[in-house]
Image (tube, rainbow, N blue to C red; front, side, top):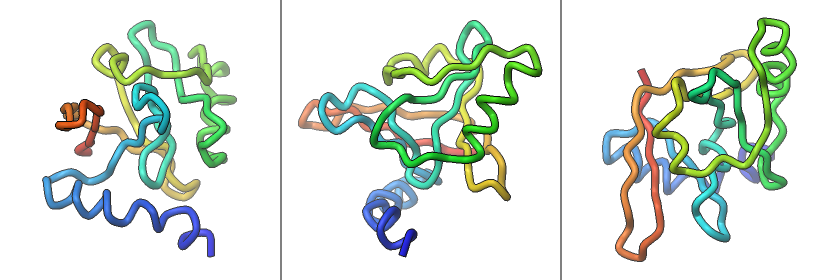
Length: 130
């Protein structure tokens, strides 16, 4: 049931992304479409320009034990960590971007983002992984 309830809405966008050569989709907040929420089936994680581990803070994101563990582990390795609102424009300055996947898979680094404006003026972002 979890897969049907949580991931069914991602099937069509993922199909469209894959037909355009991308492996996953990145969702933005539904109100302004300017803040990063999460990837289709995983949490968004990044290392910002100052070396801080950052991940979106949002009430609409499903909790992730992997992301929670990374938030707790980072400071023990000397890396500052924070959950915060992340604007889409910020990704241009991140040193690393990744996806916190299911616990068994850990995290996945991503190679590039392509950001485009839809004809309606809304941002869309798609990612291709290493």
